Image 1 (cartoon, rainbow, N blue to C red):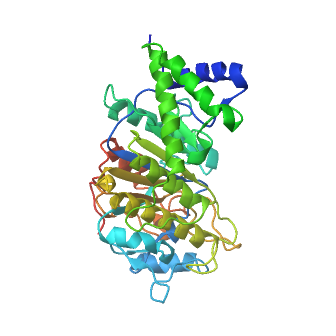
Image 2 (cartoon, helix red, strand yellow):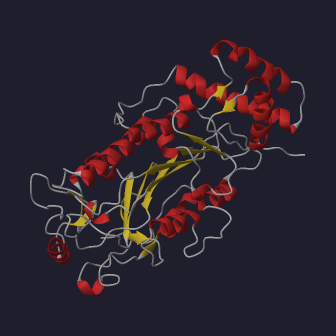
Image 3 (tube, one colour):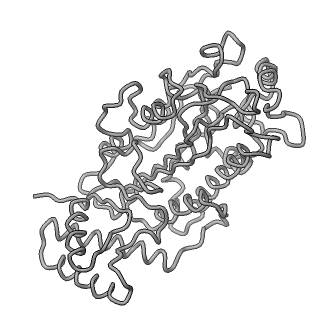
Length: 405
């Protein structure tokens, strides 16, 4: 007989409920996961405007870009100029925290990438991307679940094999029973009622699950070990390493949580982070570094840079060399801005990769912004299927076939 930690959780919850009306907060466990490399997938929900993150600084596309976005175009020569990338591209000044990592070869951008399927529905596009099967919703597993099935060493047991930062498991992990959904470490606990009897009840559970050697007993002890480990982390939180400074925001705390669990060496193989707020139809920005969109980009870039710096400077060694971050969104925005100083649902976008084994630079094939080069006469065309770039995550190594420039 085999038993997963999820099965244990069901039995454990029933047993403890009979004792004191208890709950095991925000947790669902499984037995096995990979060790070593860690893949972090950041989904920017709402359709991030790639042309306000990465834009042409010069060449023929510069004129098309400025003409299409008289209110929103990123300036090239000014005090708030873009940071130069591979020609013809520049990086938004709001993303300045990522630029030193780009210069050191730790960040890659893949413009004109995305979902090769014609939909401007947030729900459909997100589901297709997370399943990895554009146009098909009936797929029984998410793309990260299939990645784990091929990447996880047999027989490896992890306390926390996969993490979904938030209250629920994303579609990309559909079919993966090893996911812990956690908003913060202090929400991951065995709450058995008033504090004065929790230690007694936990000790009782320890005795119950140390009385045998079967799968249920093993899974029960492992689940309690996970709770103990996370509670210890909350009691004595480790400060960020390497001088990393996370934003004092919900997003910053989410990335700090991911780094903290990676450094605890609990066997974490995959973590997902959802960042909403990118559906910018109205009042997207008032200046290159002012407004809703630039503020989100700055917060995201600062969080990503802090994550890498924290892991790169950790005493455990080269955690950053075991890290690959994939940042994607369901689609880009229209090339032309709208009358409300915003942008509407588009097609091609920018995929961002970060990590110690990422081949830095700007990669792919840029289709251009001339009217005859646009998809459906309005959008950035897709020349790189997002799955082509993400496929390198199977070995946690991104090796583009066609560098740009």
